[in-house]
Length: 76
Image 1 (cartoon, rainbow, N blue to C red):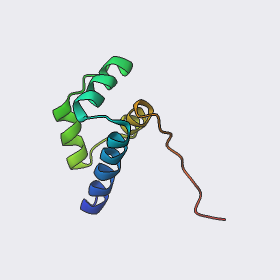
Image 2: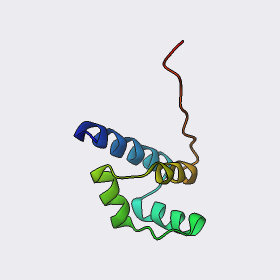
Image 3: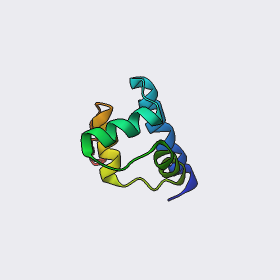
């Protein structure tokens, strides 16, 4: 993944977290509780910095933050 794309994803997720009042620690705890996954603040931080979040992880983060992921066709 290109560095610019990683930066954009990281910034977007962090902006959504801030909008909802979430820290990485609070988000990790919410993911653990709702999805029974082993996630930590450091893990999330590393994945965001490296751009290695899987789609399912992004989907779960969006769910915790009460957002939907929406694919929109670029064709009329």
